[in-house]
Image 1 (cartoon, rainbow, N blue to C red):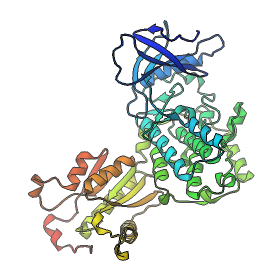
Image 2 (cartoon, rainbow, N blue to C red; image 1 turned 135 degrees about the vertical axis):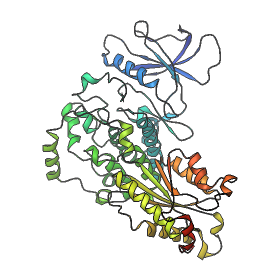
Image 3 (cartoon, rainbow, N blue to C red; image 1 turned 180 degrees about the horizontal axis):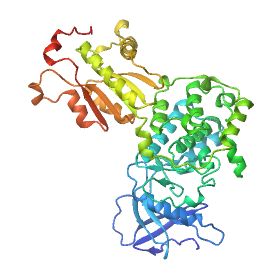
Image 4 (cartoon, one colour; image 1 turned 120 degrees about the vertical axis):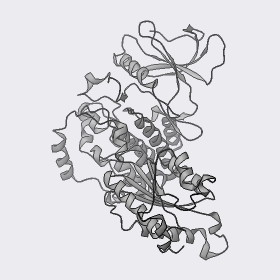
Length: 483
C-alpha cells in the first residue's frame, strides 16, 4: 500500500502530513473530518503493507490494537479508534508532545558530551515509572528502547509501540514465535532470546541497556545481527561503565549492572525498585559490582554458558502478581509522643509483613516540622537535625531482620504530616504503609480527622494501622520515649 496523501478522508478522519515513516508503520497527523474539535491532538498509525514487508507488521498491529485499548494512565497514549484489517488497518491515538529518548541521546552525541549522573537518573526513573505502570496492568512491553520512549515536557515518560507486547489476560498473538528471539537485538533480554515472554524483568533489562547507553554512549552488547550474537548476553557481562567513563559514580554503575544481570532473578524485582534507587542515590547499597572497573572473569562466563545451554521457554507469572510479591513497604515512625508499646507494635507489624514478602524494600520514614530546624544555630541546623532523626530511625529498625531486604531511611520536613506521607507514597510507588493508629482522644476523632485516618483515606495503596498490643487503659503506664 502506498503512503496516504494529505487530505484523504477515512472513517470520519481527515489525514494530514506524514510525521514519521518507520520500518513497520507510518504516522500521520489527523483530525476529525467534520471539523469538530478533538479533546487532544491525534495521530494515525498505519502499518506498512508493501510486498517487501513481513507478516509481523500485521501481527504487531493486531497486538497493539488489542493492548492499547485496555491500557490506562499518563504513561501511554490515549486510544481513539481503529480500522479493520479487511479495509485498512490503522490506529488513531493521542499525539503526545515531547522528544523521544533517542532524540535526547542523539543530541548529546552531536554535542560530543554525555549527560551527568543526575540527568541519567532522572530519565531512567521516568522510564522505570512508566514501565511499572504497565506491569501493574499485567502488560510487559518487551520492546523498550529509546525510540519507543517519549519524554513528556513535564518530565514523565510515555511508552510507544506495543506491537511486541504481551498482556497476561489476552492471547499472545506472537506465541508461535515463542522459541525464537522476538524483540530489538540491542535491547532484548536474555530470557527473551530463548522465547520467554511475559516477565516484567525483561523490561528492566531494557531499561539497563538505555541507562548504559546514556552513561557511556555505547550499547552494552552491541547491536548483534544473529541469534548467536544475541545469545551471548545469557552468559556475558558488559564492560563496566566506570571503565569507559571514570566519572560515573559507583551507585549509578550498581543500578545499571543490576538491571543488566543475565539471570532475571538477579535483577531488580520490579521497575518501581529501579526508580526508587535512581531517585535516592544516597540509599543505594553499593557492592563490588558498583566499584569494579575490570570485566567478569572467563571462568564465571564459562559457568554461565553451561547453565544457559539448558535454558528453554517457561511460562511467566502474572506481572502484577510478581511485583506485588516484592513491594515497597513504608513504615511511618513517629518521633515524639510515641510510647515504647507503639514503637514495638510497629516493629512487629513490619517484621510480619517483610517475613511474608522476601525481597521487599523497606522505607523507614518520619516527618518533622520545618520549625525544628534553624539556619542560624548549628546545633539545630537542617543537617544536624536530620542526622539526629536518621540515627533514631536506624536505631528503631535495628532489631528487625533485614537480611535480603533493601532498606532506606528518610526524614521529611512538612507542616502537614499526613500530606507528606501520602506524597512520599505516591512518588515512590509504595505498595503498603504501616503506621500507628491513634489510640487516644477517641471522642475528638469524631470531629477532627487524625493523621492515620487522613493517610488511610488519601493514600494510593494499602494502609495498615497498628495499635499497641497492651490495653488502652495500660498505655498511660508505659514510659514515653524521650523526644
